[in-house]
Image 1: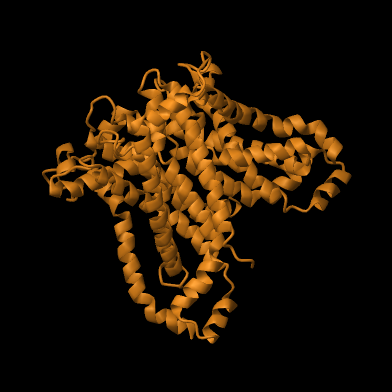
Image 2: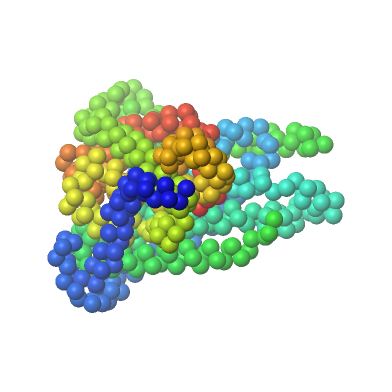
Length: 280
Length: 280
């Protein structure tokens, strides 16, 4: 089979490889190179060493957006996972109407970030005007607005994953626990949560990276207002590229730093939660 | 015994979750009711139903469709999504089968690169990719399909590889002895077996591409082509303030296709999410 496969290799892998090269590998390598350059388009890069990176760390908006993103990610990861897990527990209890509830909770997840942002902008401004404020009055409103929005969007998705995990826990474990006289609390912490570790790993991974990469919702809900105080990393990088002339190199350097942070977080998180998974 | 338990707590929780569900869909309902109200009433009284004073019928819809050229944007979105997903499914499944069946250093590194590309945030390649796409004249709906193949290949190849590994080699060897060439083996033997994976990957890629804002915004020639998220974001630009009447109508029009799609293939969507999560 090996030999006949080799003859056909162009048909099988060439289209994907070509697109993957143009759409990912080439821009990625150029991106790393250009982060050490001064440039306006990709062909006129002049090597300037670490100058861009030094500028990144002198840029107060970048540091603020980094801090804002970290805080947002921590709060949203905890909120989404705790709520999604709780809802998933309810959904596996055989309550009447479970299918309808599951359908409803999952739905916001299919709606795109831009649309979600404007929906919630209307709602928040509607509520806040009773206190004669707007969403862009203070960065606190923007922060909690984004947290609520992201919970609303992602709880359903994570709930689906948790339900699948909970359903795969063998029933005899619960029976054994009942015979041994476990309280409900003990069952939760000694059986349900440890046995759900694989799905907890996946869900925290997804919410962590989603939180860090958040862009559309941020752009549509507050667009960084007031005065860039609610700007997250992805939006900060975008505006460095496209609304500050001559800062393309700095934008690219920020993007490289962003990339390193995301990969580091992903690796650390996977190692931490994987080590807590129990052998089945 | 267990059924008795269900009966007991059942109704209380059902009522609680019903209230929660109503709260969950409320934002969308509010957008829907506001889309029939006069502009001035939307911002000031977003939580009231349209009455004789504020009701404007379909005026917002007509205005919004005119301003955003909605049906054109819908067509562009549909074309890009269907085209990209179809191309991704065919090309990446062939590629995944090939690199799984021919294990050498090259195919293993292709696999690793695909996994790696899933973690890389889009901002990392955003600037260089949009310039490369410009240079290669990929700034039209047909060209962007190619870009999506490249950028979506990571997840798709990864998921297909996971499935191909579970297909017993004997079937393919039997087909080869019967005189099939690799193309025939793939389309007559492997393709039918992989159907569930096609649906899962297709759903995940559809959800991503239909709602994607940044990639088409940077790659497409915006004077000629807009997707739905771009058209909605454009309602904000230029005038400084948002025309909330048109915005509400466009949000409703953007949500309707998603809800239709969701209702039509809800089962597959939920299965796809679980499959994607387990593999990821």
